[in-house]
Length: 442
Image (cartoon, rainbow, N blue to C red; front, side):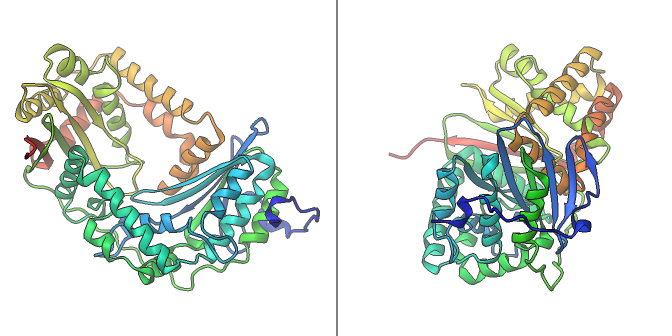
């Protein structure tokens, strides 16, 4: 019934210079189609599955004022069909051929993927090329899916006190930078998005010059490059260059506070500090620091606040340097029964102050480095995950940095940990959020 269900018997001749790999590394090679679209191939002959991923360089940070959440809503609409493949046909075709598909939106990018048996990956190529050009954006579907996203926001944020505190604390910590907006968008903004808004966003950002393809797993390179050129190579790049405005967050010159009163069982605390992102030289030490503080039950925060003093039911330290712009180092946790948010905040800050003066032991440092290294390696144990990590580094400046990341982690010293703690964890750059539980009205 569908042409994409059959492997073509015709062998197409290609112009050789189009597909000469520009860079290669450990089974990974980089190529360009005739329209300039980048293709990254990660070859694994032993894999029974291939993962096709298309990465669009647009996320919540690129959204116009008053239209937050439009990137996420457009992600939903990408599954609502083209003239050739109607609503739900995309996913149904993938599933009937033994695969799975999905997508996600971040602050920096939107990624769509299909994981399929290696001999069915041509399905992804045709489907993704079609919806890059021919998305319908039916007005009725827009209204319906907009309501779905609004309900998603209601359940995940408005009705979840801890997530709502996170959202509000980030919005206060960042005054100018667009990371301050939630990926899902503010409720009033979502409600205002119409078909014309989505079409403009789609036409601006969904093009071969603002995207790249990753194929990871088992495949025939010559056949795949030929199919990619056949389906994607004739898609024209945007005539107008995308204008990106990168707002630099001004220095924070004093502590900021957020108090959120919501129905909840226990107090909850968040503490944020402004920090740089990868590949800044301090990002490695910040990653090791977050592991020392909260990776497992032997971590500093768990041993001190949960096990010893029982100030908290749970605690965490969170740092991800994988953002294109500087973001936040976040500490937080849920207070134990009978403990206040103020008590938990004080205990968290005490642990930070210790790190500013005390030297961590060689054992503690090496354990954290080992944890990051093993997590990084084991997280890439599938074709999909290898593609995912490669794409993340490509978004940050080049997939080749993937192979140097662990070298940076291994180079971190105890002096580096103390230095970044003193450099970034000051009172003046701190934003504190408290969730104050209130009783449910009867």
